[in-house]
Image 1 (spheres, rainbow, N blue to C red):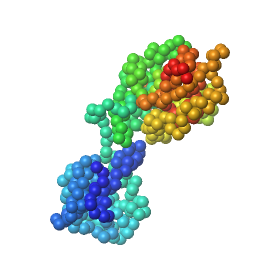
Image 2: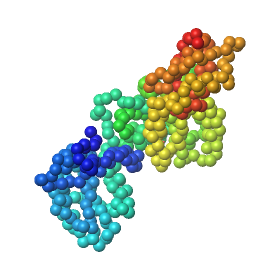
Image 3: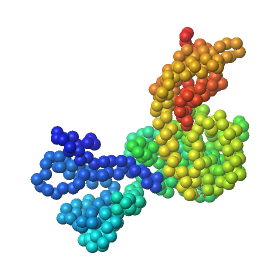
Image 4: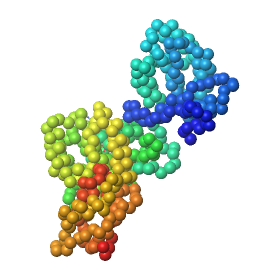
Length: 413
Ligand SMILES: Nc1nc2c(ncn2[C@@H]2O[C@H](COP(=O)(O)OP(=O)(O)OP(=O)(O)O)[C@@H](O)[C@H]2O)c(=O)[nH]1
Ligand SMILES: [Mg+2]
């Protein structure tokens, strides 16, 4: 229960909790109610104090803010004692430090509180805030997999050897989970790790690079190490990583990966990595390639990142989150039946002389955008016809990165 409810006016003294992202790490920042050590406090204040103790107990890092201008207060000493007892990392911030003479005069008293880390700050001038955020993220660790629950999403990173898959995995996890080296084929087996992103548990899997040269008739299983292939099959979301520092084109293997994941109805994100090494000429070639395979690239969000300079690395999870959000509410706004009626009225579907009709569409509640189509001749709705209907839906709804599953059912109209 977040709010303290009490039968009296103007008593809300809840703590304020907000997720904050700094240096790609997201944590909950909690602004608490004030401490009180008075014995004769009323019931609301008691609840505030109880809540405060519970928060301290759960906190990973504590920022203790004192007033440098007015100097140390009796209560500060009591709070300090309490915080020392907690055994947590505590950072003492001396606020109102813009008043330098007061700061100089009072700082010694604050040293006596026994905290190693003392930082001046000025909340009204926004000074010291960055230091605070730095100290916080340095002292919290990204949550690991003690959690027994099933992950809400399984994300797998695939691509050619040396693309930077393990580098990205480590960047996202903020730890050296996967070994990174410039030797192609460094990662041998799929490596999974769970992490929290906001409130959701997410499994992240780094895979061994796709090794062999693709031939037209190769299927993906032959191209991939078994554990990588298994990881793709089990994933709901695939990140296809493409190294832009190579020859300025998207290889057949990479296209094969894209098509496979698309057909397997995965959520998808394309990541172009190593943009620190991208020159203008290669960029033009790559853009041409993307344009050539527009029919697939139009359906998938793309991010251009560098694991070395960290450019856009922080956007990866956010982009995935957007895809998942689209999947949760895929056909919002317009009525799907109106959309299909209008579009198919402009552009009829024919198989030879037979007109293929969609009488009705119904959105199926599922993990991915799914629609039942009630049609006159289900057997004639092949990949071309379904592709056409899928494109109509994609043009009318925001489904970028989401798969779309269409199921045809016989109907007499
Ligand atoms: N310049 C540059 N180098 C990068 C970038 N990302 C990764 N690298 C380097 O590329 C090499 C390969 O990185 P890894 O993360 O091991 O690549 P991988 O895709 O896991 O490779 P395999 O495990 O062999 O499939 C390492 O030397 C990295 O330091 C980047 O954005 N820019
Ligand atoms: Mg690797």
